[in-house]
Length: 194
Image (cartoon, rainbow, N blue to C red; front, side):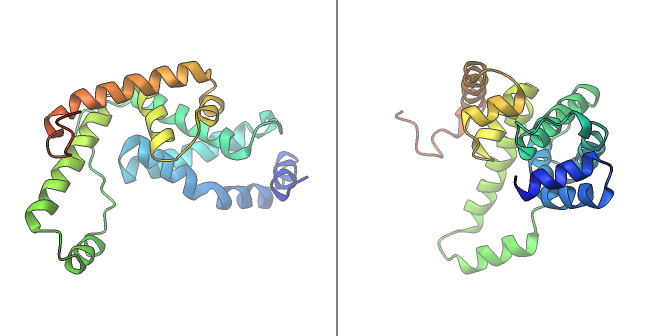
């Protein structure tokens, strides 16, 4: 039995220190997924807290045949989708955690990146965020888990509780919609002949 399984069992018996340890081990990954699903640091922080409250309340339902991370990812995705249904994400969602000092420093050290190219890259990044916001919750979840978190189709299937075929379908639709939304930038990416 792994250390994680022992912590889960202790937490299920009501040991708060064990649950705190599980939270500490998982909080960065939950936050990153929530951030990738929402594009907002503030929303990701709120959602992360909600996820761990839900995890604590449902801890007795955790089955040891699933991985702890998969179970938390499922709670995170469901919480994000629930919140998205309630709260309209109509305003543009910028990735607001970019450290301007880090970006400026990276640009200073790179002589090949001109200010024009940097501004253009920023605009393209904004357009990608807009396009992601236009996807359905399921499409965005599948796309983010696959392309931002490198999960396999099987892992996504387990996380979302849907078949691999359904994962493929959502991923295909998400990519098609993103291609259509971002067609204007095709030439900029050197894809005009494809």
